[in-house]
Image 1 (cartoon, helix red, strand yellow):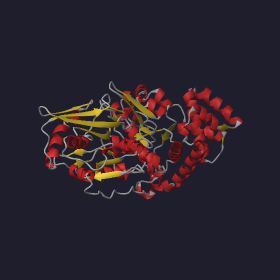
Image 2 (cartoon, helix red, strand yellow):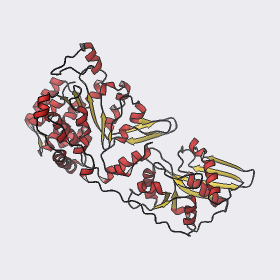
Image 3 (cartoon, one colour):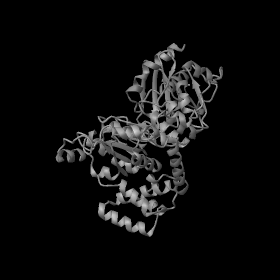
Image 4 (cartoon, one colour):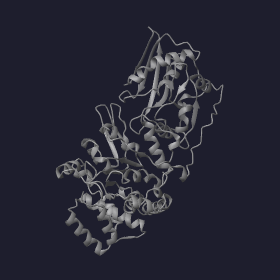
Length: 500
């Protein structure tokens, strides 16, 4: 048999299209070519594969070897094709005659020079496609735990090329124990707690409302007033991810350069990029587009501290994902789409020196400097932020005398109940409702309608601002277990949705 066909997977965004690895070994001058739009990493695999085959006890065929990765019009990347290419060469050259039907398997793995198999990125995303094909998945043992998060997928973990060949020949059985998915307890998520923050009752309430409906929030306050401290504790009041949410978040992390670690399973993502971040790093991209920070924060929180210090063009790229809950990255060769349903939490000082409104310190900024500082955040972006709240500075006496507030567990129970009300009513959180749905699910009192008209005229709300006000009022009503959206709910929502 001079031709061998094996199955593997490419990665195109969050999709894993099937790849047929065709290997033809023929007579002629010795050569080794790979076609089918391979990238540099795949082309370099020729030397790895040659050494791995030789160090696994086989003679590398001194013949003309042609490898085709079909379909040929789909760009291929990564070293995950090392294993199927090496097996294809051995089968096509007659050095290996597997007793098992290789059409019932899919292969992925990076080969070391000695034939050992190394971990690959994206195994979780690949598992989605393989599950639908009903094939078994042979991959490195180091990546098996991640792939096993997909239920009802037959995983075969291997350590080396020799093991794969022995398994296909039927001479060994592989029973490596794959660690079970950890069941996280609430107390294990973090050692932070809202109880550690003294005072700031109004800001804590704003964070509670934001968490209940996954609304975006901006905190404005003097340096040291507790903005970052509060933001870092928001994950302690958020419920654990559902299995479906956890798999989606884990898949995005698996596709990134950092990879996915099992310790983060079911934990709410919390991303805190530095203000020097580029727009590509924030939303994703590159010649081979990878997920950015907004996608890595999917189903979690993206915290932007010192918001005006970010470059304006970087902040502007957030506008579309905040509305669509996804990011589409188009390049000359292909287009990919990543999920980006994140909760934006931002913090900033009131002015460049930070002392505007401070009870003890004097602001040294001119009106022009303050306006220029705040103008770094555009109106369209602010229109997409549901809650804007001032964080007051506490004096030393208040810090010493104020008692500890509610614990995160107490606040979390209210948030879980409010979210359950939303899921039962509309099968999604309030921030995800479209305009038609928010009108359908927000039953207003007669007085509430009149109040909203007054707010629109006074604040000059846009159509987007109007519907976001309704979503926020709906969440406040859910926290109070009210079916109707009353004037008090509208009033509270309008206080949070104030002019910047």
